[in-house]
Image 1 (cartoon, rainbow, N blue to C red):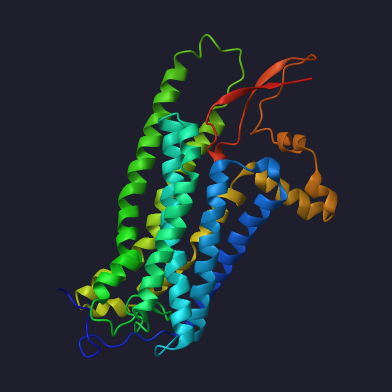
Image 2 (cartoon, one colour):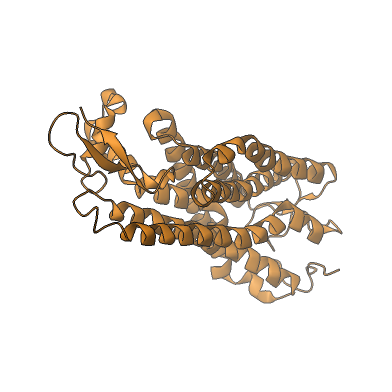
Length: 351
């Protein structure tokens, strides 16, 4: 079995103040992003959907992870202490749970969009909870009870505690407590989103055959294009953020001194802590209807803005097709593609 390097093989990584500040800033932005996702979900029920509910659970996991990591980076542990174990256990649970919820979102979208079985996808919610919360909790409890969580000399972390460097079977526990699920996510996420993208492209091609017939009917290609782009970014952002942790893990197994390279340490720290911030940028700040609500509340600065009518969402010209004139007429309006509930136009009744 390959063992982690001893302290004589590779010098102990030193976490510099600049690295700490950078990672702590990433943690703060991630906490703010997760809180923004949670608050928008709580304040505006009309914006809720099943995919955004899954995003909410993912944000809770990312929030716990960012809080735990920020404490670890701030303390920059030098030995196994009680708070080191607590921080390591919380970050292990939250980080592993984040992997599962990220895959759960992708699986839900695949079943809903490609398989066209939304009822089946909804029925899996309890399974998602059992796996995404239960399995990480089981792994964490067993690891703590067997004294596997502790000081890891920052070989595979940035000041925080994870799997103890003194554990003889630490490679196995590093895999069980995160790395194996991380690597599986690298494989599963691109596959699912490529299948979703191919399905959307086929739907676009099929729709284009009817465009001459429906030339006078409203359409919504800009919104489907936005949804298509966001689907591409989901696995891309995950891999770009998380890959540096895997790189340091592999370098550590190879006894490479490059594991201490300052830029790599910073990328590892930011990648592990900024997932919540990236999700906020993608699904709150880059989502027109949510952004419009936030800007409206920021401008009016009063409570009634929270309870404003749903029609406010329809003031964005790029998001809603203008209705036909006359009472009782119908027009094709696009539902929010960012919620992934639908990527097509649906009739909206006009009174």
